[in-house]
Structures are given as structure tokens and as C-alpha cells.
Image 1 (cartoon, rainbow, N blue to C red):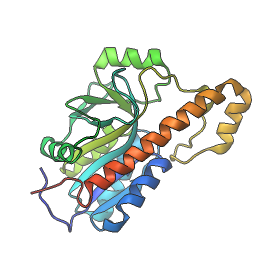
Image 2: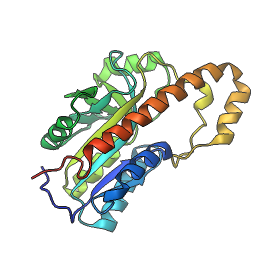
Image 3: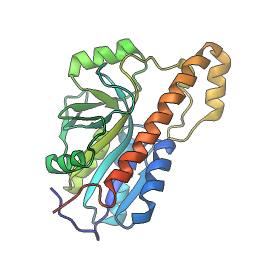
Length: 239
């Protein structure tokens, strides 16, 4: 467990611009302690962003993978806060999160829908369908899925610093994502409006699904802000 040392900032790695906007805006008053960066999509992007931040800062006290995820367990709903005990991959890798740090974070979440002592699966591509989510859940037992946490955890291992993940559920295990969203985000995590419009033009029947997804996204964003506010000023790192 890292000790309290405000000279050594904590790196907060988000994938999407949507996530970064919430996290960076909320932690701005303590930017000397908490540094948020946007990595873009995927494990490699997460690793490179974390590694570059570590190279620039040289004295990070910890790394946090923070943002949205998809539920694999159908009992977990949109807005749930996942504090995993490990990140697992299809290559049977396992990156354990820092137990004491996770415990401290969970202690600041009284009254919020927190899921602990479960693993998050780091996928190589978006799992879009209900069937795909259920199959993944059956195979690995993870409660949720993202695409960046294994890369960020790997970087933390390289730096020999603590790592945790804090993920807010956006889509549920029973949701199938609208096909029109496939090209809605650039690889750097920024919104691809042209791609989204192309998708809608070819699949106008996805409008209803996009409206429902937008509602879930709004709920997840609000919960992400609540979490960041609850964890100021040090994201739970204590002596």
C-alpha cells in the first residue's frame, strides 16, 4: 500500500473523452495530487498513457484505471461502482489490485452501489451482445468488462507502484449495443460524429437503442462525478 505523500501524484487514466471530461474537471482543484489523462481505446493505449505519465512525473504514488465498463453479471445494473480485486485477460493473465487501497476507497462509498471482491475482464474488443456477455461471464466469471485496465495495471507493475480500477457500469449484461455505435468513437477516445451518423443512416432502427444508451451514459457520468468527489483530495491513498 502506498503511503500518503502529496508530492507524489496519483495518475488517473481514462479511455474516453466523456470520462476524461468528468474526471479532469472534478479533480482540477487538486491537480498537484491527482493527474487525469485520456488514453484512448484498448490495452495498448492504456499502457502507453500510463507509461508516459510515469515517465514524465517519475514519482507517481499509484495508478487508477477509471471510467465506464459493461456489466457481464446480469445482477449488476447501470450506475453500479465496480472496485475489482483483479483484472483478468483471455491470456489467463491476472493483475491484482492493491487490497488496502481498494478497502479505503470502498470505505468512502457508503450508501453507493459498490461491487467488490470480483474480477474485471479486460477484452480486446467491445462485447456488444447479450449472448457475448453471458458467454464471457460463463467462461471467466468476471462481473464486468473494459478494454484498458490490463494495460494500466501492467504499467503499474513496471513502475512497482500500487494499482486499482474504479469502473462505473454503463451497459448491463442484458443489453445489446446498437450496431450504429460501432464507429461512434475514434481510437483516441473522442466522439466520431460522422461515424455515428453513418451508422444511423444505414440502421435507422437503432434510434431507440441509442436513446436508451444515452440515458444510461448520462447516469454513468453522474455516478462517475459522485465517485470522484467522494474520493477527493487523495483518492483514498492513506498512510
